[in-house]
Amino acid sequence: MSERVEVAKARRIVVKAGSSSLTTPRGTIDANRIDALVDVLAARRADGTEIVFVSSGAIAAGLAPLGLSRRPPDLATQQAAASVGQGLLFARYTSSFARYGMTVGQVLLTADDMMRRSHHRNAQRTLGQLLAMGILPIVNENDTVATDEIRFGDNDRLAALVAHLIRADALVLLSDVDALYTGDPRQPGARRVDDVHGPDDLRDVKLGRSGRVGTGGMVTKVEAARIAGIPVVLTNAASAAHALAGDKVGTLFHPAEGRRMSTRNLWLAHATTGQGRVMLDPGAVEAVVRRRKSLLPAGVTGVDGDFAAGDPVDLCDTSGHVVARGLVNYDASEIPELMGRSTRWLARELGAEYEREIIHRDHLVILTDER
Ligand SMILES: Nc1ncnc2c1ncn2[C@@H]1O[C@H](COP(=O)(O)OP(=O)(O)O)[C@@H](O)[C@H]1O
Ligand SMILES: N[C@@H](CCC(=O)OP(=O)(O)O)C(=O)O
Image 1 (cartoon, rainbow, N blue to C red):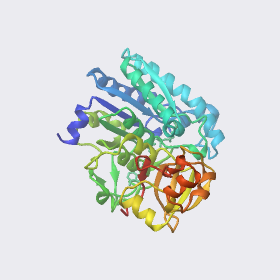
Image 2: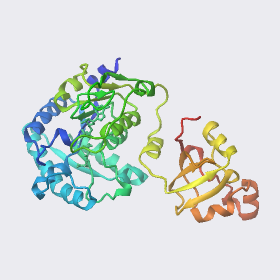
Image 3: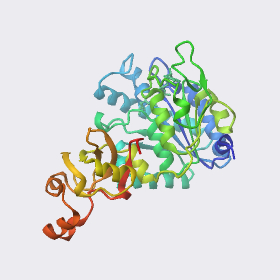
Image 4: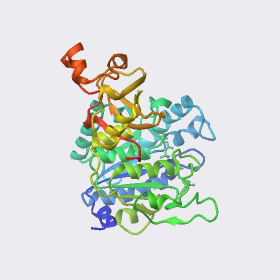
């Protein structure tokens, strides 16, 4: 089945719309465009497809009500705008979907909800239950509580992780451009890219920053497509119906061949931030990156940061490049005593509980292409 057909036949789908597709340049909700998009989603829902809708636009929709003429640079004012805008946006969706007798549920997620396994499971349960009850979940980042350090900022990667969370069959990213181009389409000479099969198709593509009110630009959309592991269509909101029907619009990102990363590893690679760093000697880099072994204390040469057992940490080679990320089995303060020691020595001198790896191979993802 071609990937376009997969999108058309998907039983579970995530649709994400960016701020610029939902709000006006004046910083208010664009009711007409929201209604038009809701018409498309309602029609697809009517054929039995389960849809999770990821909607940006809270900050943009809060600008005019707060008397702001443009997106504020500081986080506190962005959060104030999001607090006002999210309520208005959701109220608008509630009445727009009500035209079709559909009920919507608001789900606000933080990066931490994706990062912490227990939260991750909660989000999964909530979305699953909403879908089971015939409700259409509308997801956004919980901007009012997210801090700069732990923020997605864009909703593209969030949409890809949500797609994973609910095991969606396809992801549709709706923006203010009709496709990916070889360069920013606002510049002359940019050509449309119809299909992306892998990094080779992106070699000549310049991924520019965002337009007017969005944040991620194309960088986060391409990253989202890579994370999703399912067919992803990128197009503009006006082409949403065609994209969902499997018509040849926008850019189709084909999922990479081969085994898909487990949800846990995707989550580890894309939804977590290393809480510290563990430095590896060349032998350990070889073992972890190329031979996919667990990281043992013998190959560790240094540690940096203040993490606790269970936290995600970055593993660095001798030049300081991050080569992998994993869930560590020890607190940062315990590691200096273990470094360079064999597990047998540690078990004998410190007790059997010290025989465990620093990071088990099942809790490791490789973040370098040099395998
Ligand atoms: N190579 C490219 N192809 C297409 N659009 C690009 C490219 N580089 C930069 N852009 C810009 O990215 C913008 C879309 O990103 P963004 O504003 O973050 O969208 P959204 O709010 O929909 O998430 C477009 O308006 C376009 O000007
Ligand atoms: N959560 C934010 C999303 C910010 C944003 O601009 O996202 P996007 O338009 O998808 O690039 C909001 O609702 O304003």
